Amino acid sequence: MAQKFLGKTVFITGASAGIGAGLAVEFGREGANVVVAARRREQLATTVARVQETGSQALAAICDVTVPDTLRQAVAEAVQKFGGIDIAIANAGFGVSGLFCELTVDDFRRQFETNFFGVLNTIYAVLPHLKNSHGRIVLMGSVLGRVGLPVCSAYSASKFALNGLAENLYYDLSEEGVKVSWINPGLVQSDFARVDNQGVYHAGREDPRPLWLTMPTAKAAAQMVRAIYRGKTEIVITGHGKLILFLSRHFPNLWRFVLHLRSKGKLKHFKEKRRSQD
Ligand SMILES: NC(=O)c1ccc[n+]([C@@H]2O[C@H](COP(=O)([O-])OP(=O)(O)OC[C@H]3O[C@@H](n4cnc5c(N)ncnc54)[C@H](OP(=O)(O)O)[C@@H]3O)[C@@H](O)[C@H]2O)c1
Image (spheres, rainbow, N blue to C red):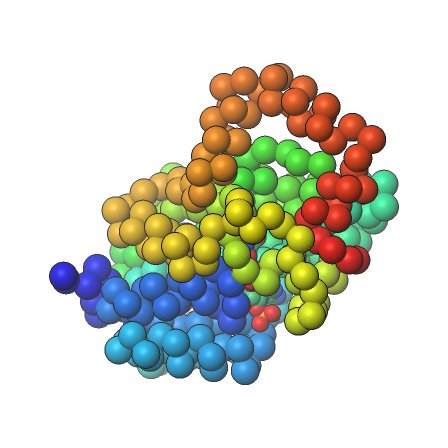
C-alpha cells in the first residue's frame, strides 16, 4: 500500500519517549523524513534507530522547548538536512499533579513554561517553514484540556490554554496557508507518570494508571497519524476519552456530580492514581 507521508518532513518535539517516539516511528512507516527533538540525547538516538528500521530517514535535534534559541537551532538543522518542514507536532509536555492547596504559583508557572509557552516557542520556530510548505501544525493537548479532574489543576489549566490557542490558530494561520490540528488523548502508555512535578524523569517509578484503560503507544500513534493524514481538526484518542468528552459536554452537571461523588474525601487517593510518588 502507498505510504501516506512519502517524501514529507515531520518535526516532532518530545520524541525521545512515549507518544512522540511512537509518532516518529509511525510517520517513518508512512515514508516521512522524521526530525525528533527533545533534551535527552541517548533516548533520541534510540528513536532515530527505530525510525531508520522502518526504512525512513531520521535526524535527532537536541532542544529544550522552554529555550527558544535551542528550538530555532533544531529547526535550522531540520531544514538544512531535509530542505523544509511539512508537519510540525508540538508534543513535548509533562504533568504537574497534586492537590491545589499543596501546589504553588511556581508549580503552575513551570507547567505553563513547557506545556503552553514551549508550544508557542515551537510554533514560532517552525511557522516560516510551514508557510513555505503550506503545511500543518499539530498541538498535543489532552482530554484534560476539555474537562477538569481532581488533583490536575495545573496540568488541566495548561491544556485548556492549549485548546484555546488551537481553536484560535485554526483561523489565524489558515490566512497564512497553514493548517491546524490538535489532539486530545485520554490515557496512553508512556513515561508520563514517571516524570515528577519538576519535569524530571525517574526510570524506576511505577505507572499507577490502570493498564486496562491505557491505550498502547503504537496504537495511539497509528490512530493519530491516520487522523492527521485525513486532515482532521480536533482529534480525540481512546474510547474512554471520547466518552468523557461526550458526557461532560452533553450532561455537564451530571458529569460533575458523579465525579464529585467519586472523589469526595478521596483526593489523596486520586493523586496516587495519577502518580505513585512525588
Ligand atoms: N500519556 C498520556 O496518557 C497522555 C494523555 C494526554 C496527553 N498527553 C500529552 O502527550 C504529550 C507527550 O507525553 P507522553 O505521555 O508521551 O510523556 P513522556 O513519555 O514523558 O514523553 C514526554 C516527552 O516530552 C519531552 N519533553 C518534556 N519536557 C521537554 C522540554 N522542556 N523540552 C523538550 N522536550 C521535552 C520529553 O523528552 P526529554 O525529557 O528528553 O526532553 C519526552 O520526549 C504531552 O504533551 C502530554 O501532556 C499524554
